[in-house]
Image 1 (cartoon, rainbow, N blue to C red):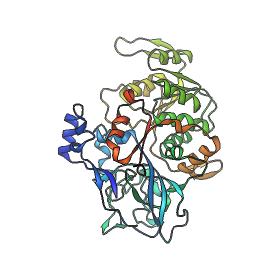
Image 2 (cartoon, rainbow, N blue to C red):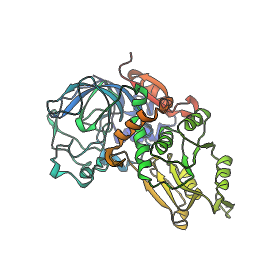
Image 3 (cartoon, rainbow, N blue to C red):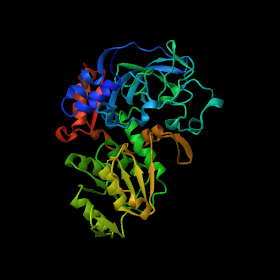
Image 4 (spheres, rainbow, N blue to C red):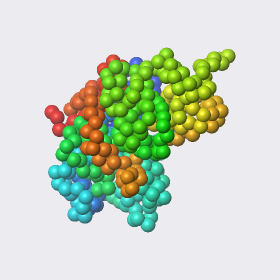
Length: 418
């Protein structure tokens, strides 16, 4: 089958770091370790697995960060290469193992890419504490080989499909998946909407984890799919206070409003006025950026994770406010953490998704996200700005990486298109 795979080696890492700003070939071309071509399709590892035909797969900011070598190497021990990329996946079931009960042939499914102890071949009584609690995104065996065989080899180490040497991700024509990864998609959701369930679930997990909400106002920093999805998730989860969205571009601002933002401001002067409007007073230190006292935002979602946005969140937070880190912040130099302690702030990170408390039941974040998309009929598909055939992956990656020039928000690959 045809697939886009990526291999990390020390020479390629150094080449990409050194030449990435000078040539696309070092980032998205042959010099980078990216390869498009025929790979061997894996067999079903066990009878509780299925085979999927990929309908659409998203390009995530973490994919671009990996290919441009901007991601921290800290997570490298929990991945394996070469890997077929792609962890935002909408697919159709084309083969079902004999023990599978939750899905049927022909069904569309959203695929959770997280790899659990059960997928690694361990019995229920052998599961790590994270998997046992319903949070396989922090599986404590992610750095180890599994006991299950894929082909003739043990399942390699790894946290998620898309960065895994044994299990191909969504940038391919087909893949195999365990039945616990699959969430059937209602016919009322079109493919573009259903393809967004994974990134929307990231925002939903953070929104649900931030309950009880209080009365607001909340500030969401960022204008990509995670930020826009967080706005929708807050509303879907019942947040009724004011949501201020810090957005750079007009078309992103329109989507933010349609998904539940009360107001949109640009970074800089408009954002400064927004914190002043909360009752804050500004003060200029002898060096550095303006700081504030009084007012502030009791709940802030940083969906960027840069030095600038983290410091803004710390400065804009109300005393004893909460800051939610969703921007995959990595190695950051010269960051000023003064207000973390000076304002007694609660800073919390969230990763992926898992089992949540929702309306008196325990449900997976994917299922909650799916059900709320059906219930709210929100226009989330407007986030999808570009769709490319799989063979045009280089153009798709360039479009996703150069957002300010292309206007892209979410770029999808469609392996069924020719």
